[in-house]
Every structure is written in C-alpha cells, then in structure tokens.
Image 1 (spheres, rainbow, N blue to C red):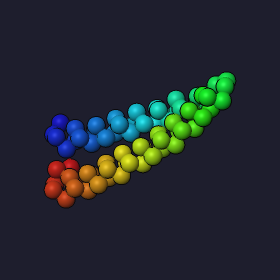
Image 2: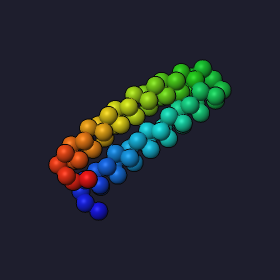
Image 3: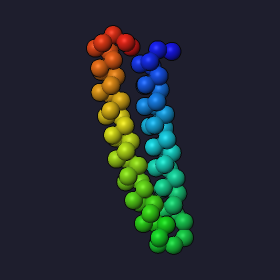
Length: 71
C-alpha cells in the first residue's frame, strides 16, 4: 500500500468515526433528562460539522494525489 492510499484510508477511518459519534450523540437525545438531550443535539451538530470538514479535506487531498499521479 503506497502512502497516498494510506492517507486516504486514514480519512475514511476518520469519517467512519465521526458517523459513529453522530449516532452515539443521537442516542443521547432519547435518554431521560434534559441534560442528555441538550448534550445529544450539540453532539449531533458538531459531528455533522466535523464529518463535512473531513470529507472536504479528503476530496481536496484526493484531487491533489490524482493530479500528481499517485492514485
């Protein structure tokens, strides 16, 4: 596995972890108590923002690697 594919694997792993965090935060919304509900919605919003950032960086990196002929 060359370095470019390893970097893309790390981006994919980060995206998967952010999706898992969104699911975990969404599960907090349905727990009892207003503290968990607020924390859950904040976690969902932050998870979506992080996921969009990871996808944006990954697509830019993929374009750079493709232009260099590494992928």
